[in-house]
Amino acid sequence: MSRLAVERRLVEIADELGDLQYDMGPIRPPNEGGGHSLLIRATRNCPWRLCAFCYGTPYNREKFERRPVEEVKRDIDCVKDITDLLYEASQLLGLGGAIDMRVARSLISINPALAHSHSFVNAFMWIAHGGRTVFIQDADSLIIKTHELAEIVRYILEVFPQVERITSYARSRTIYSKKLEELKELREAGLRRLHIGLETGDDELLKYVNKGVTAQQHIEAGRKAIEAGLELSLYVMPGLGGKKWWRQHALNTAKVLNEINPHYVRMRTFVPKPGTPLYQEYVEGAFQLLSPHECLREIKLLVENLEIEGRLCFDHFINPCFKGNIPIFRQSYEGYKLPEEKDVILKTIEEALEVDESQHRWTRELVGTPYI
Ligand code: SF4
Image (cartoon, rainbow, N blue to C red; front, top):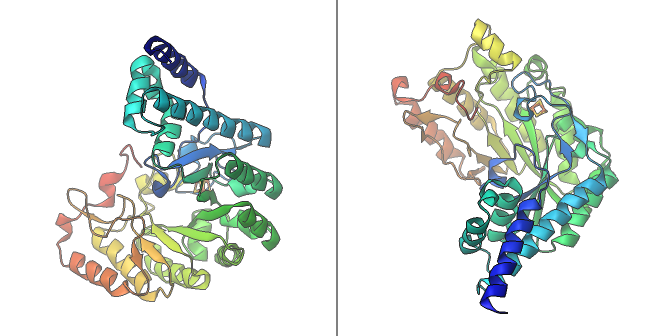
């Protein structure tokens, strides 16, 4: 191909890429971020929208929608078209099919709008990182018919056979309502991990924050998912019970986690979020946040009572920090292995408790910041 023909084709490719768009939801777990995971949206928004600390605000409280399977498949085809064009551009640029920043820079220099195209950026980053993980959005994908979600999962693997891990958010209440056979069907289709907001194992607190699930339902849902062969990543909110319920929050959460024995527990310290009922209570003084030492004591009580064999992770900046946002705990996505590293966590807490509270970051400092 002549140089002129190559340049003409690259212009065509950059234009075509600008027209290729697929739907994408606003959030995903941090370990699915950084461009590592392809985001495929099976539903839009949250079907519950009533948890007092969240209220569906990550989705702007927009109405929940199920997407037709054919529409989701078209999105997957769209990603395939984008990645095919990226490979072609790489060949034309003499890079032998390698997808890296040189390909992105060349295409963006031709069509600057690509730098602002969420679809281009997500698909490019995903394939540049090896194209191995996919996250299905939004808040509770398992609420759609099991055979439909299984069809979507199978289609992802058919179009992208190199994919090694497909994960999704789910509500415990939804998993609780599914039959074991349905979860097994999803596992067999290729779904591998569920991210579930447990928040607390205390029934009084679950009711107070309107989670729509009981501790027993959390337990049965978690056990069923594990029995079906799915990996479980459960999110817990230190501080959610405030000064009133911190002790029962810690003890009952440990109890529920022990009953489930999940693969991962991910800590997400509670920070009141504007637009939610719990924020309103905080502003009115009805809800009192824990101080840094109180929050650490709550986590200590939880950890002391934990008997799981999974990993405990503090993989988010909202977890306890010293001033200057210096994290107290290890921040990796793999966290601490339990029970082997239980003493390491407890020692870390003891040392942090020796540091005066004035040298800690207080949760109130995070209220209203753009990332909350
Ligand atoms: S189910 Fe999840 S997304 Fe929906 S309101 Fe509760 S915490 Fe928010």
